[in-house]
Image 1 (cartoon, one colour):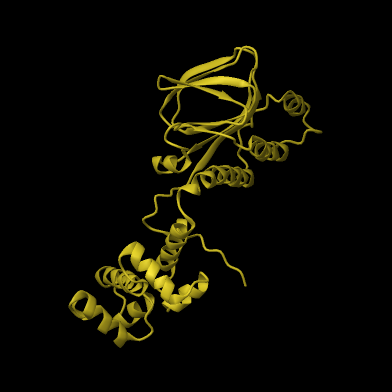
Image 2 (tube, rainbow, N blue to C red):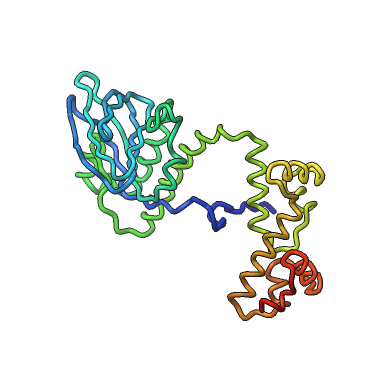
Length: 289
């Protein structure tokens, strides 16, 4: 059996928040075309497929050309102008999200909004796939004409299934950009973070260090050494702390029995739970129930 767990969505203190697609589009601009200034309440990303142009964000101008992507944060004053000799063709995606997502998307600090060497054809294909699904060109002469001229904007959509498809396509694009930024962390650091998140997810099951080590194909002793060096605590104690914290919350906010709470936080034996709880908290769980 193979299983993949989404630890990002599970993690309660994660900075991740859902992103909601709003606009997708593609356009071949005319020479010297300009637009704006405008302030939007959503994040907008342009992908330059060919040609050149410039974008002004909050008074700073950026020159763009083929293979680059430009991120425009929400609530920024923005305008753009197409090159007079080599007008750009570009596609875009706009979406609503909290400010937490923006740092994950931004490239290097020296060029905070511009991504270099983007596989723009990959992005274009994602958008064209949605366009081809939304329209039947053989039955819609207007859509076919617009598509052929490459001046097609996706129409307003009230199809729930297609809305899900738009969301999937948005996440595919965002995943591509975020993956490009992940080179900052070393492989070992990333593995340790994955191990910690795994324990956050499964602390309430009867897992042991050897179980975790086997899950991540690492020797238990080496796992303990790496984890303690990175987080200042052994993996065993980390799991205990998570369980006791959860148990305290259940004891203070629910009517569950101590036996049930012991099971809910990963202990099959109530006596063992009570002993570990008293050692960690300094008093019996009965005092909080």
